[in-house]
Each structure stands twice: as structure tokens, then as C-alpha cells.
Image 1 (cartoon, each protein chain N blue to C red):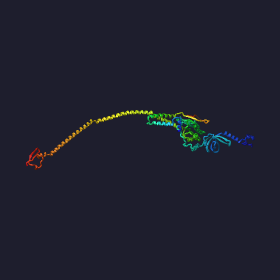
Image 2: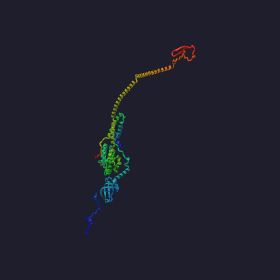
Image 3: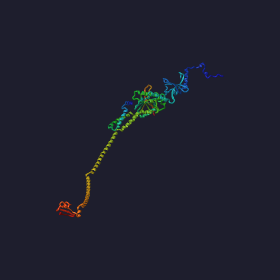
Image 4: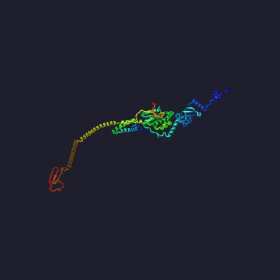
Amino acid sequence: MSKSKSQWDFGELFPAEQARKVLSVSELTAQVRSLIEKQVGSVWVTGEVTNLRAQSSGHMYFTLRDAASQLSCVLFSREKVPHRGLLADGQKVLLQGDVTVYEARGQYQLIVRAVELQGVGALQVAFEKLKQKLAAEGLFAPERKRPLPKYPQRIGLVTSPTGAAIRDVLHVVRRRNPGLEIILAPCRVQGDGAAAEIAAAIRLLNEFNHQPSTLNLQLILVTRGGGSLEDLWAFNEEIVARAIFESAIPVVSAVGHEIDFTISDFVADVRAATPSAAAEIITEGVFASRQFVQSLMRRMMQAHPRKRLDESFQRLDDLQVGLLCHGRQGVRERQIACQNLALRLRQVRPKQLLKQRRELLQMNRQRLRELARVRFKDLKNNLAATETRLRLLGPEQVLSRGYSITMDAVTGKVLREAAKVNAGQKLKTRLAKGEILSRAVK
Amino acid sequence: MSKTVRADVSKGGLPFEEALKKLEGVVEAMESDDLPLEMLLARYEEGSKLVKICQEKLAEAELKIQQLEKTASGEMKLRPADVSED
């Protein structure tokens, strides 16, 4: 049986004794490190953060693990990682970094260059956490909110010089108050380090305001256009919130769209829904005043003295016409009144009255004549009747039948008793026709 | 707000808000019918001056935008802003 070669027998490669190369630990470790760095190098790796330790140096150490394995990780403070503060045990992350060996411990590890948070709601949780913390500190207190100057002439602008937000803001300002002077403190508004840049820009403007200059900045607008929650995240970072809180100049925050609320919105003195809305708020005073002045000018022209004079002239003309009219009218009225009076006078003049009276007299005379005639006739008739009756009652009737009446011839007294007649007494006897004078014998 | 007024004063003349308020008062007085013509003329002249003041304050100036930068030596300086505008 031939002598089988061991797998460890490298034969000529390792001659005994003088060919053996002994390495120090450091040398070996350096070799391993070099090998790993060359062979593995930069990687993306995903897992869950555990055993997180943040050192006072700002460096962070943690272990990334999955179900079966573990990986030591280091996040140095110099790395611009947007969500550094959100790293916590149990957080699922996607890391980008370089695999190397920490020679002091002979431990291989990942030097983290970038962190992406994974898992739904991680940002939302962080947002709520910071919001509560800052609210508790009084950064959102309503009594801290300062009113904006109504007519700002010079403002600070914190945004990206290349973003959509600055275009919107300038568009609105140009239209509503082109006299506004804008001092731009440019900064990035998303990505690693954006929050620090925003905070620095706010501080820079405050520093600028301290300089003895002719005109101060009257407010600062911190803004960016719409984007994802990640895009807007810089405005949810504590460093930005602190810078706004500490600003001696009132701050307007306008981040994203209407529905987006950021921590900077809560801290700022005024929150605007969008960059355009912010520009409208800032220019409102001047814009409204310009329109007000326009309306006052129109009203002033309405009340222009020339107008009043014209009106007065017209009124004067009216009055003059009226005056003449009224004069003529007066004369006419009097004429008519006079005519009426003349008519009435004619109606009541004496001739007429006399005629009337004469007519009345004539009438009465006629009536009188008529009455008299009737009365006369009546009397005549009465007389005839009475005559007849008288005749019937009178002595003639009796006398005609042969009777006679004897009277004392002297006294004319009718004698009714013979005894009362004296002898020799003169008597007068009336017959139907004629009388007899006689003397009594016996 | 008082800051604004002071700024206006420093710029010279009547503060804007005061001028605006005065102008409003003048126009209201002019609109009242019982203002004698002599007074009306005087008010009109006053109003015209106030309109001029207000318009000057609201002047349609060219929008001025400058960029603030801090140099390496810590000095602050303003320069025309490079803004991409459509």
C-alpha cells in the first residue's frame, strides 16, 4: 500500500525547519485584515440592531444580527447619517459599510457608512418621540409665538437655491410685494447632514442680524417643497428645532404640502401649509395695503372737489330753472285765482240781484192777485148764500104772506102786546109793500 | 409691528401705517356730504400727498435677492444669489 499523502502534507512547499515561517499575532491579523478588506470590502448588509452603545465621543457601537449570526458594527461620529438618533435596539436596518478587522481584538467588524431604517412606522415613532420631548420642554408653547411684522422689508430665507420651494416663493413675492429684499442662506434640505445645514443657516442669519446694518431681517422663512417623509426628515430633527427655537428673529416654517406637519412647523412662530402659502402670508400686509390704497384713491376721486363743484353747478342750474318755473307758476296761480274771483264777483253783482228780486216781486204780486181773486170770489159766493139765508129768515117773506109788523113810530120799537099801546100813540105798520102811519084809537 | 414702524421712520417721513390711516380718515371725511367745499379742497390736497407717500412705501421695486455666506475666515458677506428660476 503506497503511502497516502496527508491533506496537510504540503510537501516541498514547507521544507522542515528552515522553511517554516512563524508569524507574530500582529502580522497574522494584519494579513487577515488585508485579505478581508480586499476580498470582502464594501458591502450592504441587513439585520437587527442589538447591544447598542453610544459613546461620549459620538461613536456608536452595536451588534447586527439575524436568526443565526452576529456582526460587530461601528458608526463613527464623522459619518453623516440622517437617522443616527433613531438607531435603537431592535431596529431593523440596512447598513452599508466596509468590513475590516479591529486588530486590537482580532475581531472583524463593519465600519458603517450609511444607515437606512427599515420596518414600517420607524420614522413616525421617532417623530412622536421627539415631538413629545420638545413639547414637554415648552418649545411649542403658544405664548412663545411671536407675531410677524405686517410690512416686512427684508427677510431671511433658509432653503435650497435649486429647489422648487424657492421658485414658488419668489414667484409669489414678485407678484405681491416685489419690493421685498431677500437674504438667502442656502443649504441642502434633504439627505445626510441637511438638518445641520438648515440649523446652521438659521444661526447664520441670526448672526448676520446682529451686525450693525441699515435694515434688520424681520423674519426668517424656513422652507422646502413636497416629498416623502424621508425627504422631509431633516425638518424633524432636533437640531433644526433648537435652531428655530433659539432664533431671535421670528420664523415661518413651510415644509412639504398641506398634509405634512414637521417638528419645525410646531416650533416656528408661524406654520404655512406650503412655500407659496408662506410667501402669501409674508406679503399679505403690503399686498392688502396696496389694494387698500388703490380703493382709497378711487374713493378720493369719487369725492374729488371738481366733482363736488360740477354737482354744485348742476344743482345751481336746476335751482335756477326751478326758480323761474316757480315764478311763472306763481303768476299763473294768481291769474287763475283772480279770474275765479272776477267770475264770482260777476255772479254776485247788484244788477243780477235786482233782477232776481224783481222777478221774485213779480211772482209774489201775481200770487197775491190770484189769491185776492179767489178770495173775492169766495166772499161773493158767501154773500149770495148769506143773502138767501137772510131772505129766508127776514120779515119780507112773512110780510108777503099778509103779515105786518107794527112799531112805535117814534122809537121804532116793535110792538108785541096791545096792552102796552096807549091811546093816541102814533104807530108805524110795515107791510109787504110800503108802510102805514096811524094813530091808536083804543 | 412697532419694529416696522421704526424701520419706516428711519427710512424717512411718515410711517406707512400712519399715512395709510390718515389717508383713510381723509377719504372718509371727503365722502361726508356736510364738508364745506373749502375744507374739501384742503382735504383733497392732503389726501393726494398721503397717496404719494403710501405709494412710495409700496413702490414696485425690483425683487432683490442676495446670498449670505460665511468665508473661511469667519467673515460674512453678501453676493448676488444664484437661484435657478424658471
